[in-house]
Image (cartoon, rainbow, N blue to C red; front, side, top):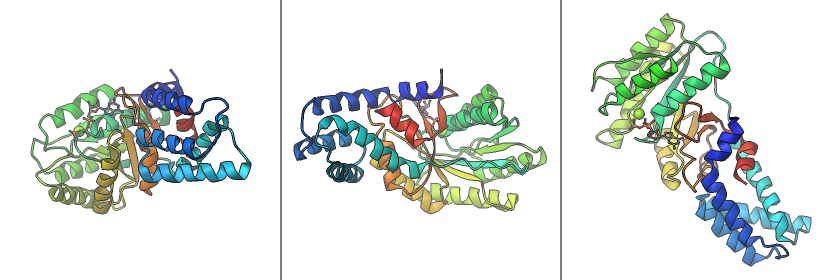
Length: 305
Ligand SMILES: Nc1nc2c(ncn2[C@@H]2O[C@H](COP(=O)(O)OP(=O)(O)OP(=O)(O)O)[C@@H](O)[C@H]2O)c(=O)[nH]1
Ligand SMILES: [Mg+2]
């Protein structure tokens, strides 16, 4: 199955809701007036596009319809697609993969359950299949949650990566340091550092992440290539406040939005792109190893509407 088909399948719930509601509002022959725009606003908010982004989108649509002399509701979907693509395009961002023979180092961040560990597995699979990256190392930096190490170990076996682990409750920075040593020594193509999503306090977690970042960069003698923040696409506004906390602690280089499948709230990506001035590098639409790809604005909007 092609990625576009998988993306469409993944976004099915959002699409069905969005397209269904739009069809009810955009009845043939209905005029594009303020009442219609108010209904459109409601539909976008229901899909978790967020209040601010929705207001801006509807205002833009109104202005553009006026400039172009559009009076009929039949042209609204076309306008909406155009505006959503324009909004989402600046949020696209390519992965920063090294080409100098050094390992590309990924630090994977996010609150518990957002999809960090599965994102590591999926991205590793993608790098193997589509970028010819053969030697991949996972660092079991979530030493806090019971079973996290085993979960990463299972994925490592499944996608053919090597695992660097310590015992439970070990210092995650020490695990990360060892993994960097090994990645450099063995000339790995990529290193993924998994992290815990929950500690006793938020402050504690942020301090730990800063430390991992510091220790790794010191050993590397250069910045980490990608500090990816994994956000659960079904959590909307909440995801945005989390992102601000993580970004403050360790500068985030890109966002991964997961779980866009199985929810009618796939519009959250528009909210995330609008509220955070950070590139959305990848999106996840399922639990399988090949359910993650680079985020492309036009493709996303076409799959959605
Ligand atoms: N439907 C769906 N499920 C996903 C996606 N990504 C992750 N999941 C599921 O979400 C759950 C949590 O994923 P994990 O990768 O364990 O999340 P985590 O951030 O590592 O969680 P902690 O280790 O507890 O901090 C798992 O059941 C995954 O299979 C996705 O894109 N779509
Ligand atoms: Mg995990």
